[in-house]
Length: 406
Image (cartoon, rainbow, N blue to C red; front, side, top):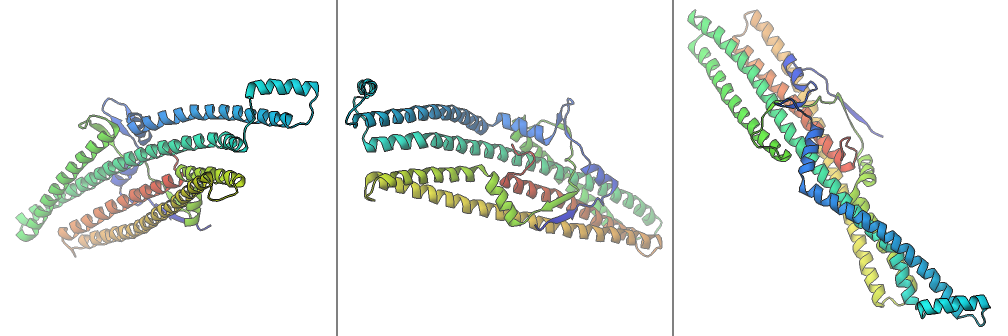
């Protein structure tokens, strides 16, 4: 088994360490809202979840009734077999005659071979068919819950990324303001040019505009988040810092992910079950009726082929879904590694630029530009880390291995 391990090394500044530290989203009144509780709120308000929950309950009752009916039909088949045996005996003992008379008054006549086959198929397959519908609705219920979980996590992730950007941009503005004050003093002393001072001023103005844009984006994300929870759209929270990111992300091979999906995907298992039901019905029918042109043979063959095609299509679609998710995850891992390298380079460049500034070899502008590049790399790496975790979450949901999988 090929295992790829990517260490998410903590190389952020104190400010960014605080951003990714374990925390929760909190109501202004003091109530705590984490991703699991947000998912619970959204799930409780979901009409799809309510619909499929009711359907599951209904089919569970139907399945229990189908099992009871199946037992009754099998009893009837045994009674009919006994009646047929007694009817065809050349002579019967007094006890057998009494039993025959009782059965004769109850049943009037024994079943024909085709009637017996119909009853055998019904008693054998009806519970499985109802169980199939039960499993279909369980799969739909699970899918509805997974979609809620992924949607809430994406909204939460967008909020935290916007908040990260605001924090980084605010820190950058503080840095630029400090540099601008120093530059203004040096300009007054005639040590730097007006062009250098204006460049810093414009950089500061640009950063403030970008900060305002980020704050607007955060408000939009909050509205979307509140909508997903069924909360008032203008509801405000005291904090919305993301959960702690994992130190390690481990990737399995493609075949391992596909095998996990086969074992855990409810839609795949339901399609497989329907295929097996129709295959058994086809085998029971064709085993009795000799001629392929028989109507029941033809109907059973059509149903079998339809179920077979549906199962094979579900199989292919599941494999494609897993492959696409694995590709996205692998690409994101590559992107994460690139951002980690870029961050290391920018950190090294910043330290070198500061050293040169202390020696009088570069200006404040060069230090400011190095800081801008460093802050941007920090944000890019943090964003890549969260996006990597999100693509892994999507892959885990598809393969049924997500820890919070409902």
